[in-house]
Image 1 (cartoon, one colour):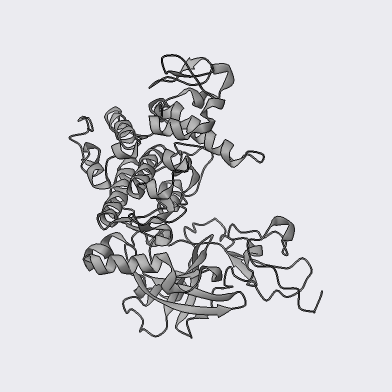
Image 2 (tube, helix red, strand yellow):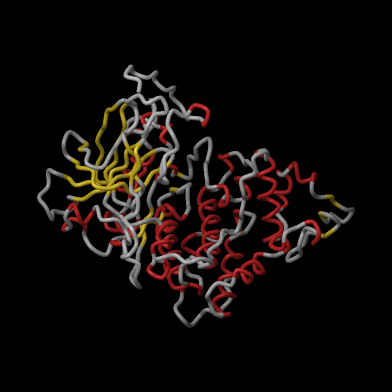
Amino acid sequence: MGTSRPPTPPSGSATPDGNRFGMAGPACEWGGDYRPGSYHPVEVGNVLGDGQYKVLRKLGYGSFSTVWLARDLTKPDGAEHSIVAIKVVVAHAGPAEGLPEVMLYKHLASVSNAAVLDRHVTKLLGTFVATGPNGTHACLVFEPMGPGVHDMVENLPQFVPRTRHMKVRYPFWMARQIVRGALEALAFVHAHGMAHGDVQPGNFLFTLKDRLDRCTDDELQRPAHVHPPMRLPKLSAPLTRLDGKVDPWAPKQLFVPQPMADWADAGPGLSLKLSDLGGAYLAAHPPAKIVSPKGLRAPELILKTPTNGLDGLALDVWAVGCLVFELVTGQQLFCLPWMPRQTEEEKNDEHLLQMVSLLGPLSDAAWARWTRSSRYFSVNDSGQRTLFNLCVAEGKPIRRPEDAHPEELQTMEQLFDRLAPDVSDEEARATKRLVRRILQCDPAQRPTAAEILQAPWFQEGGGMGVAEE
């Protein structure tokens, strides 16, 4: 084992060729990304913020941060906000006061009612700085929340323990409640001129049914869903350098994210809050680049419309339409598998081809911007586009049976039916109408978040049969 100090890893993103660690077992951030400018090494039991916050549990991680449950040691046990969630941001992001997440939360706080803000957006309690081997890190202190929509479904009692071929998806009543909560939060921020910019299941968090302030550290560190005779899950794994040296830039072990699923309110009164304003922006002043999950991008974003010509609120709404389909069926509407030799342009083409297949022809403006469409389509004298000699029209498949998988020959409605969600015929019809109403290729034709909330789909019982307009 080497005793000399290892060379400082370069700043920037790590690459597989430059990995200095062996393969870690748990599903978490990559150890090679603990380097100057990136993650701050945090472990359960550490104390952050000049002795104020004791780290109890890892809640999650992303490309720009890790998130931890912590106890505020300056507050008495049981005091409000004595248990918090701390987002430790990568060093290269800069100081807290310059982060969009902080600036836009403060903007909302200055222009809206505090109670309404707290109802719809995860509460920012404060900020502090952590300095370590990888730089100076902004740390954002939030109220604790439950898992995101993406993770909570995995923790519903009916899916624990998991069995083979189990269809893991939300019951219809929960899907409807989740969409309602998401839209209410978006309608709130949209009303104040703000686009979220990163609408996805992981950014809508379940609220908690009980206050964590009254829990002991042991209770808060208990693994989720441990049912005898199941073994305790492996919550951490040592992070060991390949050369055997001590690594000053990384933690000694990596921790598995453990969202607060056991404390989340997943009952009939469930509610959600919008989180992660890191990609948010004032709609009147869009950033130079808008980053959105690949499968949730609107056509105008795929086609690289200049951001000063984009309607950020309409981009958020498109993503909601995709989420309605996903939450009810358990499958993403647009599936874009990773292909090792596929270029970015080819990935975008595949996404647009799926849109045409599932939803019908693009708008004239979209066709005009899709300069590569001539690789797949020809236009006849009457202006009709054809692909593999099949006319592209509403409700018509765009590929020959011998050239496509079965799911490629279906409209959105047919794919919905094939996935056989557990809904009545009336609920299925209403859901498909709602998805199609939202997913308008022309952003000017999309309903607003507030308008979608008036749809009969959200009514319990009566009204399902009324067509969305």
